[in-house]
Length: 109
Image 1 (cartoon, rainbow, N blue to C red):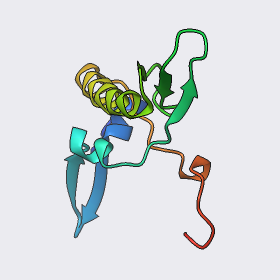
Image 2 (image 1 turned 135 degrees about the vertical axis):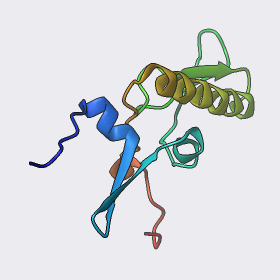
Image 3 (image 1 turned 180 degrees about the vertical axis):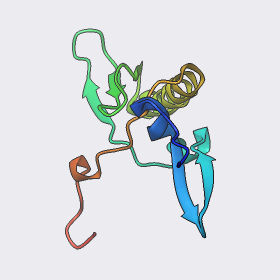
């Protein structure tokens, strides 16, 4: 009888499974793994309050703002890190970026 590992979808998404010569190697995805990924940012100018609002559509609720576009984008990177750290600690599934939604420049793959 084979041993079966029961995992929730959330648990499964956090681990990489590699079958190497009948032995299973399990590697947990880390903060660095997710931070290295190219998540799409949406930047919106706040015409009423001033400044800019930045969000990551693939990371629900991950949103930040800043007075300049540069400060808003830096704050968004800090928010992304905090969001991913909290999700890892709480065992929340982290969606990997939808690469189809990232605009590509002509001639680039």
